[in-house]
Image (cartoon, rainbow, N blue to C red):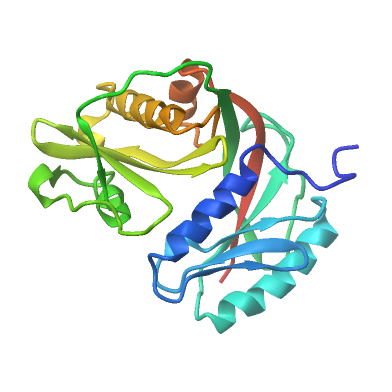
Length: 247
């Protein structure tokens, strides 16, 4: 039965470990393990205020988690946050596991995708390590290569930027946990899309991960990214149904 037991998609432990690593870069941020969920609390970094349901996905479990999380985020002065419900469904269009959560609004769905890294993949000398903040910026706007700082000192998260003709125009984060590499926040500045830059960047990150001992990679894909990841050998093994706190 679909909801008989908790769903733990591939890479979930790597994902939450990456949130813990990112928390060291943001004032007041932390990862909280609650009775029914694990929550990333980032008072100064709104997009990272996400929680994952740990109990078997059901309306009752989701409602209990929301009741607890609402107080947690309120106490941290966080107004906007999301609850992710893990599901075994492997497409974007299938019916939701839970159809309503009081006080929450259904938002996006991301596919959980994974690939076995059977051999080293291609690296690219246009890709450089930088800070998470710079990588985040380089997915939205072109950043002169000379403005890219070095990696965040002591952070257990890697940030990458692809420099094309002296300008950083694509970027990503990655986190290595054991033999799994989590790949996150892959993006290309809109004017530079459809040039193969995200592919080259992803291949470089996976090559680096292989060289450091990774043998699998996991990620959460939007509909826009799915064709790229499938072309690189990733396959869907589940999804997250995301709900955001309503006004």
